[in-house]
Length: 410
Image (tube, rainbow, N blue to C red; front, side):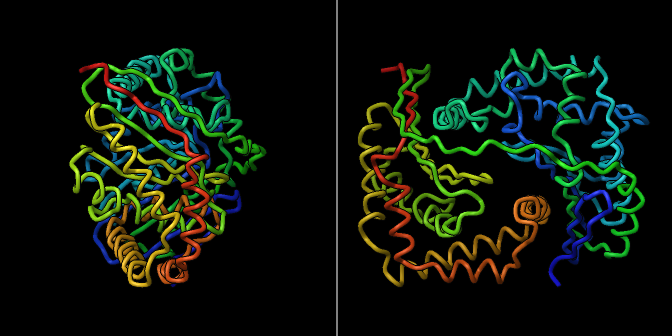
């Protein structure tokens, strides 16, 4: 069996992948992200992720930081639009220590006001730093443009004003409303026996009070294409072109993952990289991405270029999209594309920490995890006709939105 599953009486689910390694990884993945915030709560999920490390009922912040670091391990956390993750990497003999600490942080944090005030300055610096980086900012601004007044438009960091208004009472109320045991997964990758995992999870997690989520996320169904250009300080022009795509449960999701990989995935031989950056040297960076949310997806192409090349670069992007709409991949092209993405997935399995986080996210979304064989079978069953049909839907020029940060320098 590739995975082991357990469920505690309070609804917390546990997934374990046994591997032969001296290093292990574990973490809590919680189905709460920035899309679960009200407008006046903007940034509070990310703030809580920071505040978890500021003290519990039995630990000061420095005790938390030293607990794993002192045995050579690492502890970390991050927030997305749909999940919060808090996790640790450690040598396998320190699994009990890691589980106990993560449990204490997640369920017993006290959020001391003095520490919260200090953390506000840290997060405001983070916001200002991101605003100084147009490459990062344009992605968030594009999502705000596309999602309009829907909660998915929420910037994960929040705003300077919204962060300043966060206090302990707001944090506790948000946790009460949004953190439920049936929406929490504890994920483990490591050379740790299932018997040990079950024993320690019963010891540390079984007494957590059961809570069932009553929150219903607002579905996104109001997309319409928008074109916008903004003048920015700097010498480089940045552009994103994109469209809504398929959500996590859509039957075309895997096919579009493959199509996006062909177009502008991480490999240097993607069509965008070969046909624009390598052939003409117009762009410093060009790539396409596919963000998958529970109910919707978002596809975008990013490029950074000199102001004088922006029109030529955009024209070439549309040329590549047109090619995928009008020309069916040959049998050999499709075979190579499948081999490439299967190889990328296989290599990614070497990063056991990312595997652990992916397992937790997958269990939250689907309540099951596909084996590698099942994943590869789905990829191998994709046809040329599917990819062409999807290209004509997602790459439809009439449905594409765009955002340009144009340089104000000549």
